[in-house]
Image 1: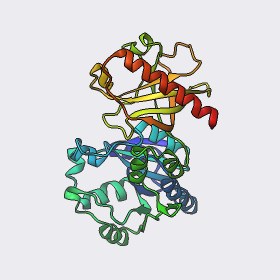
Image 2: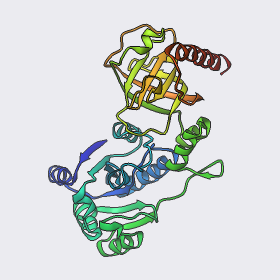
Image 3: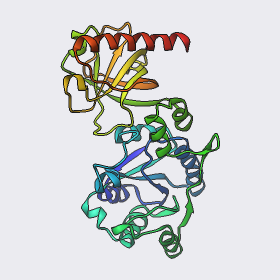
Image 4: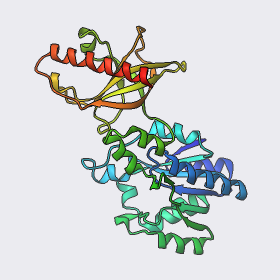
Length: 314
């Protein structure tokens, strides 16, 4: 899959390779869940029929994160993980447009002409019928239909995909995760919910308490998870390691930043700088503030015991 950052790079790419047009879809694709995968499979079939690339158009940051950063919903995945997830689908190109003041102020007519027509040469476009774009969100599905008639490309509505009678969406998955309903989230994602990141040096508090943790940089200000969880961790060697994880600000030591810490069972290796994939299986409890480090240590021991029992019963 070819990753193209920004419209200027798309123009350069087209000059090098020749623009044979494309079929495309536009969206956040947060989580790349089963609904997204269904759309991408259909889009890939169209791309083969047209003999042109299957293209996903997305934005970084996501528009709501730009307009209302304090109230924007927690991401299911960061951009790096989204790119990897899309690589596993039949996507030929990912066009990632930087959402900034310039793009926010672009009239919808200019977006159609500069991005869809002149930039991509779109021949077939899939979007939600509630999709809004351009300055002041004035562009609508109807405007895309009209543009398609003018510039000779087809516009179709993104199909609904249901699992167990419910529409699959990033919002529903987020709510399921926040409620600790991991099996429900898994059925919509098609896999365990996971976070990936590199192990960094921490304050070594877990080691002092007898539970050394891997501190993982998740590059998120807001996450859909807060609390203590049973996890399975994969490393770059494909090894599966059971453990218990904490996501939160560590109120007992008056922390401020959200940190992912994982205590790996029966594991004693130095893994600083290593990339880990943490799969979340069950929520054990909310994050709590304890009166002393000794009380925190006792609770961690209980968490570890419960997590190990989970794997025994699984």
